[in-house]
Length: 108
Length: 336
Length: 93
Image (cartoon, rainbow over all chains, first blue to last red; front, side, top):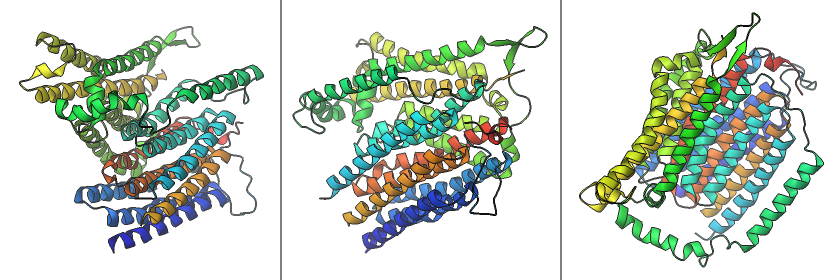
């Protein structure tokens, strides 16, 4: 039963991660793409880690999995926040017109 | 588990394809920043490949170095050098021919190698059974990688530590000698930038990272002392410890780091680690054994091995952590 | 049971490919950095799932290390942009 729940959650989580990655690829500008990354960092990672919690046999591995979940949940949004702030401060603008995606700032 | 072979095959193909794609992207890119970011991805793919190849200790080292220190040091170098753009995008014809030739020779060289996992390969005939069969009795340490690295091949590891120490000293000497003439013809020496870093002004970063740094340091100590039983050891722990201190430097400004640990102390730590390693070897000589033969250090053989491996891993960790921190400190001086 | 693992590993590899493409085409440094960040999370999950699939969950320390130190690269890059205000706003090709 535990493995069934774990396996199901694992597949759902992996699919959520894939949908976030497709969002990262397809969305028009940086600030939109942050949404895709957010889906991966929170819901996708959370589901996969919950699945691993069901699949872990021993208490020490379950503890480490919980630690990984807590760290990802705290640190990923913080890094995304720092990145978005740096992008905003360096002159990358949010565009309301989504079809027009010609960014000139921050290009390399 | 019948499907592991299939998982391995699919993971191998997918990861190697992504690795090649990343390498081509890095080659085509013109901006050092882009190359830095892509090299982080390259290191991640390599780490996953090492995991698939069952080399957990190597993967752990790749993870620690790739995510903890590599991008910081590359960014320090880019920042130190004023001009952030590369000129030529595509290599010339001669270098392409040279690279292709060396590549073809390397591929030809693999023809004589044993197949991956071949039980009849020479390495599986005499060395591997010896280490796998007898190292737990001889050293009393469950992780064979640690006992091979620290005990059977102690010379090798001593050499590696000396290499890290020498490289660190060389970079410090190069940076210490730099002066630049200002408008009046006076030479100026590098000093730390005044004031705080902008990152500490961000309350989110200050709140979260100041609480993460102790956890990073704690995890480094766990890796240091748990290396006998799981993946990890002195090298990885040193890098993680250094990354924790460098986080403090990034957060509060590099000029605040010498207030936490004195710069002279860090450089002393570099030398002390190597000295500790060498002293363990010499004390084995004094106790009547061979150089770096830890068995004579204590009453029983396994207790001696435990003591010796503990001490040299400590020395390795000290040298690696101090080298990382002192490199970070000396790269982040500004022209005063 | 194993096929759950197989399916999720294949899906995670595809997700990694999407992030890699975004890191390759940019167009800004921030896009690349975001893609690299996402790629780290995906590799973390991939390595963890692989350990569970092969029955060695005790090696999960590697995943813990990645989860703990993931922020360092981004922090270094953000610090880089803070110290050079003009860097992000010029069109450097």
